[in-house]
Length: 334
Image 1 (cartoon, one colour):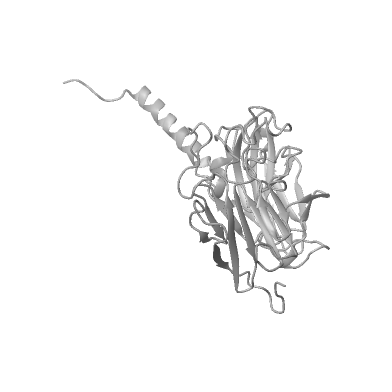
Image 2: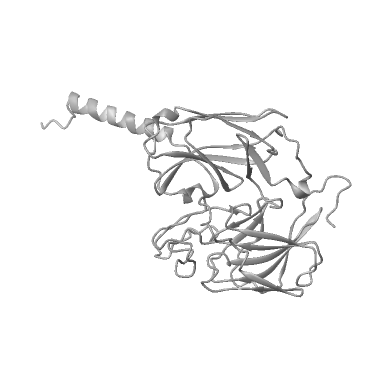
């Protein structure tokens, strides 16, 4: 009878190989939302990093990277706060942060070349030390990291988020790099929000004009032939800062009297995909859909509630009901 068993030496090698694979797999941290859009999870380090976060009420928020010495060459740590790429460092220095609100979201990842790798995420639970707090209606825009004042939030975000192509994958311009991006928060720097204290399109002031983007991840977006500040062939992602000189959304509309006139075309691409007006309310808010510019079948959320299931084909001026903001006692939107 033929022997079909594995020799002891080969068996031992296979067991070691399997054990190493299992350990490597267990070390990879699963993350949510748009982390699939961070790029290929190539290893930037010689080991896994351990992040210590200390968050006590009315004290400094502290963050420490352990095993930073094991990082691969040309690797830097980055921290994205409330969907904004905010701070970059070598991992050796501990971070001390103030002026953070409960609910602020911190996401730490490494970057090397064109790839990024998730390390950890943390949601602030206790308010930190700060002498500049304001109310929920107008949060102070800046936090302080190691003495440096940095913008970490928009004063208004309302919990709005756009999910490019809904449950389906969002493809790049070649149609071959499908990604499930997840909802992209309004606080992401590629979106635009602006408050108007005059009526717009029949919606009483104060009203917020919002221009949302659904295709930052596509190659050659923004188009370098239309935007001289963009390098040809460069690839931007939602975790990247917009290139210097490009202010997303700010030039993609004109205000004529009480009318909003979107500016379409490649000149403002990709910052001209979805135009909406948002009228906040304590018990109930309102979204007025204005225009879509050659976009996916996007889904619009507010605080996890679907407001518009599919933006494609929606008529201009259509109103949608959105959750209220739950105003503290004695405060209203007026």
